Image (cartoon, rainbow over all chains, first blue to last red):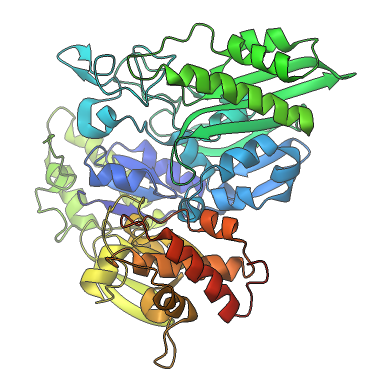
Length: 322
Length: 220
């Protein structure tokens, strides 16, 4: 890891001022579970690291009239122990507790989860976000077991645990820079990169993610994650669903897949299919099939199509039971 | 190897990590011209100085840091890039926490910070100031092993032993928060630590035994 200066601002304006100046060439430090490893591997070499954990306004998990406010530096542990999250936003609770390492839950933050860099091993070994070598992506002809089935030109999978649930719940993300704040839909925060200048999220230079606001739950919601091992593992495929019901039938649905593409995949086809139906084993299964329509698996990850299908089915059945 | 950027070299011409001061930083900025005009840089540098003062910028050279470890305040001089783990092991002679993966994955470096288990390899020492840090060294009292350590011995919960300090600290912290765990909860609660020898069965038994000796274990 290269040497860097450490800034410990107490206010958001101090932090954004540091990020605004190119002289600082700064990176934001919250839980550090991604940034510190990236710096150890020289993938990020900031001149200044700006700790935002001591900025009080960026913390906390609280329910207000506008819904649930999750501060950027709220840890996964805080989210896991929030009673409101558990009862009203089970989709978020499942995504948070799916991160099974207590240490990572104690350290990792909500903002950091959204802003982490891809875990793609080509990226982590210095081949960039598109994993290019000699003008060609290394992924389709390489080791792509854990890559996307909705990819191209970027084949990594969005590593965010919260992303699919937040999109299913219609959450908004607030970003601040020295000039002010802007709010984007969680669905638009994730952007599939087309070249090496973007990184998969709509976080511009000089910006800090400050908070996530999840509107009052529009309906019953759930997340189902599938992993290779029980503990300490990234999901292979996840599905977050949110259903507005009316008289036992689905009035409107959101079905979002995670870990299958460079951004969470919001499936309009599955949502359309579910409208007007009641949830049973057969409709849940067909919705799963609709969600993976158009998937383009690579040489080693065809299995992910089946897992994503099953994740949708099980998430829907979990909602049906609740 | 990729081209390693040196954040201090570009602005000050000084060796990274040594003698980098705000003054040197500004002086360096003032004399480098390059593509930008010196005037613009001077303005930015002045703005930077204001930010530096208000936002409490330190380093990248060594800075004095006070860490509260096992109840004792310990003063040490570290660069901001120094992790808590390397500081414990290399500067404070507290070597129980082990450096294994060094990427926040294996749990061998587990310490307790403000009552929560964390990976010391992924915490900056400078960031750990003002927090109560507990390491394996601080668990035993009056020359007696901590009940968790004793339970690990009783249940043969180690083979090569390299992951053991991390597991003992993680187990202690887990039992602090869950005094009456079921075996399934132990399995989940120790999910942040890896043992390549595969001694998980013994470790889980040890955790359940320690829960009992510590006055809990009612669901075991």
